[in-house]
Length: 178
Image (cartoon, rainbow, N blue to C red; front, side, top):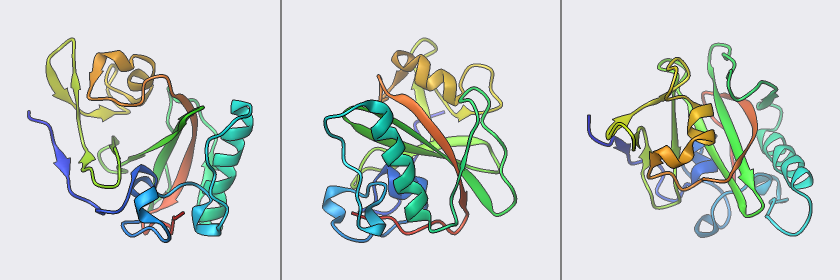
């Protein structure tokens, strides 16, 4: 299997992709960020990581305008979602954040690396030298493995990030921006 990519939302970054907004509002060149659609963009900065995470979560919830629900579950056991919704995941560190989304039908995770990049549907397992899907049902190639054993995957640009939470998102998505 080769690397699989998808062209999606030329001015949409990982946050816009994860929350299904191909045309974010505001400064698209700067990238959409949690809270951006409501005029309160959350940017990394000095301060404790727990406070930054709380701001990111509050920004996602605010942008969701009552349509996005934070789902508390461990990363090793991503929850199911009701019909007409899907699951998004937030990861973060002191330098910023990254978002991924899970297809409700296949249970596969995908992500977008930046505004001009394509959506990544699979990733190289370095030890096995094969392209693999990150899938909740797989005992090895799952979201927890990707984040905790990130050095075994390439290209993965988000090593050293922490799991921040899951969000239930309507299939229609939400408006995000900066």
